[in-house]
Length: 286
Image 1 (tube, rainbow, N blue to C red):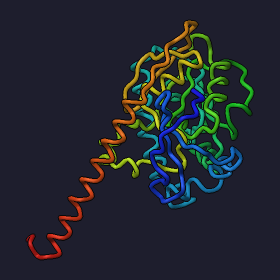
Image 2 (cartoon, rainbow, N blue to C red; image 1 turned 60 degrees about the vertical axis):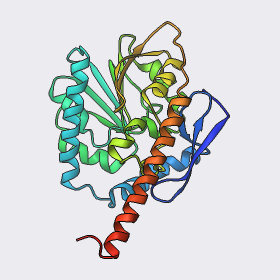
Image 3 (tube, rainbow, N blue to C red; image 1 turned 90 degrees about the vertical axis):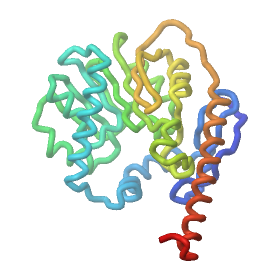
Image 4 (cartoon, rainbow, N blue to C red; image 1 turned 180 degrees about the horizontal axis):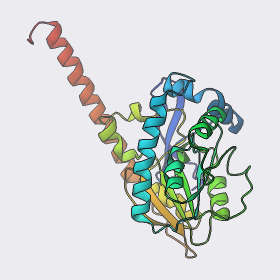
């Protein structure tokens, strides 16, 4: 929303890096502010991301097995919610090795993936590149030339990493076919209690520039001419183009209350752990 009035939520992430996470008082979007420079983020994903988050630069076989399984589930969810014609072009931004696209490829869709990670792309070509419907390239949405407009564009755990989200979505609206769809999967803020036992600080990481609820994600989509087709707080959501102006609804109060509730839960959990440790230390627990 280009708001400039924020509540400070946290000053570090789960790794202990100095990351300022703020909540916009106007629209309720949680975000990193200030950010690094765009070229620094590109360098981070090309040279450091995998080592920090996976603990290794290598790509073990387990990585591909897990990605294929995840991609299969994602494919099933998408086709359950969309009537997507075979031979339609499916474009994935931040495709990694291309495991999700491989599931589309096997089912008769033309696929195109783009990513910054050259090694990951090459590993994907070795495993999946024998099919003529499967293609991946190094780069981003602004560096590729398309011969046809995709019917589906996928951002799976990628949009929260995008440096200039407004520029990105403007490009998406430009290249997506008029009757096409945009699928977005990101970590949902409201899943913190499920996945992180309410520990909001344990959820924050330097690579994520935005932290969405379905409402705040949809607000951004409305700004760029998209409307929600289906979605949940997980977050998995499908959007399509619309010619009508959509209302922007603030999620500030809801998001602020949720973060405060998470902090109370984190404090209570911390006290319980300390009491349990103390009781055990004093020999009061068998």
